[in-house]
Length: 76
Image 1 (cartoon, helix red, strand yellow):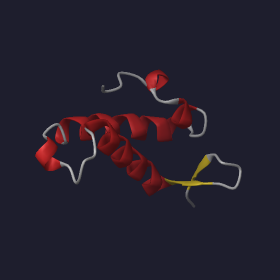
Image 2 (cartoon, one colour):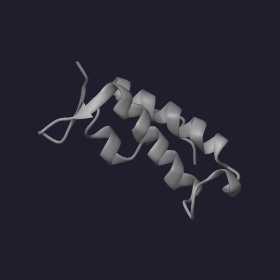
Image 3 (cartoon, helix red, strand yellow):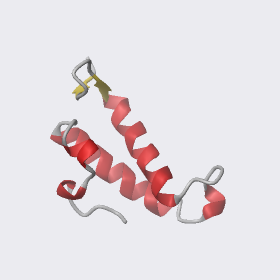
Image 4 (tube, one colour):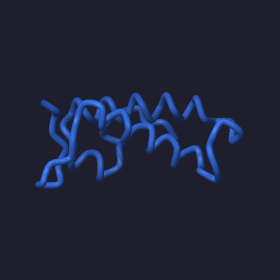
């Protein structure tokens, strides 16, 4: 279930990340969705969706960090 726009992202992403982080998340998720369509390309029993969400969060963490307020902020 790739995302066609950031408005479709889960609330946990939309409510706690800036727009740029949401764009990163969407692009990383969609890329991982394609890359890991074959179960043999995934580790363990993870579903395609689980892997795609993990990849997307990892991409966000490259440029953003979670603050004490629970929201994600651009790294210095």
